[in-house]
Length: 190
Image (cartoon, rainbow, N blue to C red):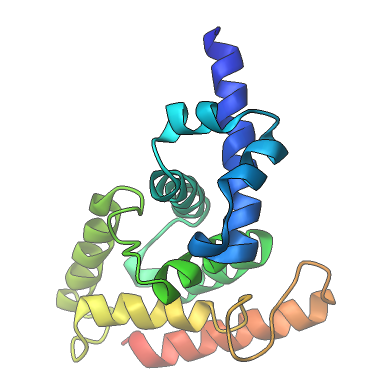
């Protein structure tokens, strides 16, 4: 198989698996369904990914990488980061659903996430911003980051406050962005 054809097959598998995992979770996803949707046989799926959990890991990593690439991080602009995450979660709700399924099913997403150095870099940047007097030093960097992410995902597909969708009125998105930026600013910036 040519490299281009192999890449196209891998892409179809990841797309089909994304839809199935997001809709049914890890345990509920079916290799037969994913293979059929990708237009290949199960043996090819196993040849590419080994097993269903490895396929889930590849799907999760692909979406996490896309989210990290889509939302630049600056510790001095935590409100901007939170708003960027909100927007990205509206555009790409499947990552939030995949993360929630992993948590519900007891599968650690930490080792499936993109480069762990990306999180470490954010934590270092928050620590530096705390030492520089830009971010409150009374909260540990990992808790600052966790809270900012949680706030940004309040209106995600798994949030308790009603899911924000791309087709919502622009004024609704703007109201949420403003509220999010305001709360993150007041909570964490000095």
